[in-house]
Length: 78
Image 1 (cartoon, rainbow, N blue to C red):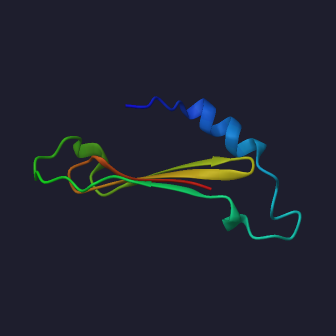
Image 2: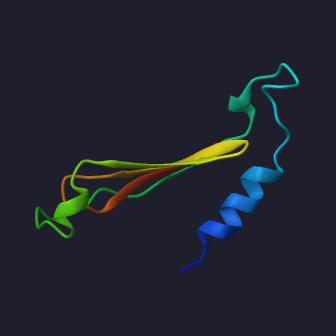
């Protein structure tokens, strides 16, 4: 299992060229991590059921989507 700290992700996203200022598409820099769906209906974390967490950064953002059991189903870095 890999360890990725939010601070490392923030530093990476902050280091990306400001594509909007240069007139190019910001979609040219994006990483999407999708997790296999859970086969259980047991709710793991009720506070995150079907919610999204958005972290806005200087030159990008992080979106973390949760499934019906409260587990992470998708992470998008852009």
